[in-house]
Picture 1 (cartoon, rainbow, N blue to C red):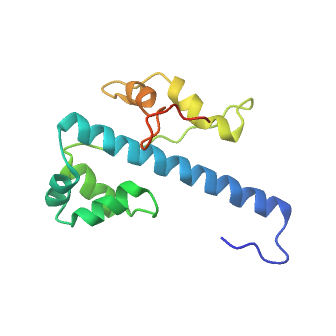
Picture 2: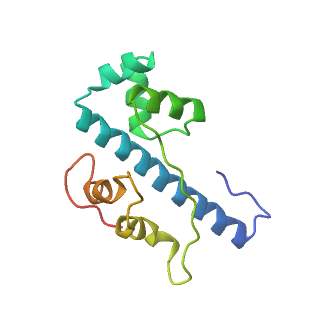
Length: 134
């Protein structure tokens, strides 16, 4: 987003927090999909066939550079024979906005949900396999 004249520092700060949250959501989403694909032994080409899209489209999705629609998320969950879980929780007063990912990794998983194990998995970079710094 461009910041024009007349935009207050509060508006700029809010936009920066939104961008940071969006990056975190994209990272979490692509990590979850990649983890489940590995668990199921699915290639990108196989996922694409199940979704009825090209392998290039799956690469775009997993590349994280776009805002996905709910329809695309539904197609992904159907193709993976899985269901996305949605949780919106308040940040604790002592939490800095940037520490949200670390707090998520420490969260206790809900029943029938593997988020804690995957959160530990996600602490490594998709590209390098090295620990991520948050």
